[in-house]
Structure formats: structure tokens, C-alpha cells
Image 1 (tube, rainbow over the protein chains, first blue to last red):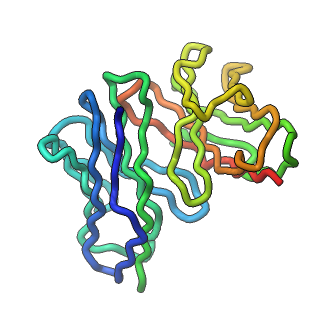
Image 2: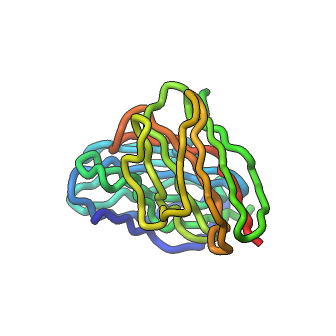
Length: 114
Length: 114
């Protein structure tokens, strides 16, 4: 079945540090890949997405590239801010496998210190 | 920007009581979902709903759960006889297309069973 693995947190960085959160997936078809963010006390918000190999999703300074050869979708940001402190979820949706709706990774908690 | 809205934002209920969580999906969306997140754990799929019927459900979605779209705007999740382990954040989501496409989440309903 489909699954998503991402690095376990928590991740603690200083402001302006470089961020990488690793995400790898297993899918039987050709999934779309997503990063969602959950700020403290809030719901899940779409951060970025990519629907096919080599696509790069980007938003708010975050980027992730769909790498089919390594089945990865790592999230990066060049300079984090305190306001980026949140839990980040990698997810996939497989259009060829209707029985598996959105599958989420376990989430990675990021804390950015001033 | 259109959004998914959920009520209540927080509910405390006695074990064994029935609970109904309400959602108003984005108006032109056709696919509806419920997910849950037990505190500190991953986001888990419960059920998807399309064309006025359940299209997929997980093992979690047993006989004590039911969903309904009673009118053209609301989408509800009913838990018939709550258990302590039902305490979680419940997220409603909707999409205008099926698997492989972005789904949009509400802010969540935090259910505490005591």
C-alpha cells in the first residue's frame, strides 16, 4: 500500500538557518505530493504541491521537488523565521488507487528560535 | 478565499454520548472527507463521500461512525456512542476533484471524551 515517511522531529533551528525536512514515499501508482502545515492551535493548510516528476512546488519561501528516482519530496527553506514554527506534514494522493485517499506522514515539528 | 468551516471548534462529551460534528465544505466541491488526529499523532483517514454515498472508509470508521449530507451544504460526522479513545481533533476536508488532487481542510473540531 501507499505510505509516507518523513524525518521525525522535533527540529529546532535558529532564525535564518537553512531548513530541510526529508520526505520519502511508497506508492503503487503516480501520486501527487503535498506539504501541509499546521500552526499551533490551527487546522491543516496546504503549503505546496507537485503533481508529476521533476515538478517543483513553492510557497512562502519553501520549496520541494518531486524526485521520482529517489521517491522523495524533501521540504527546504533557505532562511527560516520564528513564524515558521509549526508541524509539517508530507502527504500523497494516488489518482490510480482510489482506495487510498490522502496518506499523511507522521509530521515533523519545527521550532525556530529568535 | 473559500474555506471549509467546522463546528463546534471544541466539544467535551461524556463517554457513551452521541456527538455530531458539522462541516460546511467549499461550495463547488464534490468530494468530502473526514480525518482525525489523536493528540501528537499522525493524521488518519476516516471516510470519503461522493455522490451522496460513502466511497471509501478506513478500519477506524466502524459501526459507531456515520456520515450524512443532510442538505446541499452541510456534511456531518456522527459518533453514536463515544469512547475515551475517540478524543481527537476531527478534520473535515473537501475537494472539487477526486484522488490525486488537493483537498482543503477545515480548522478542525476538537473532541474530548471524559
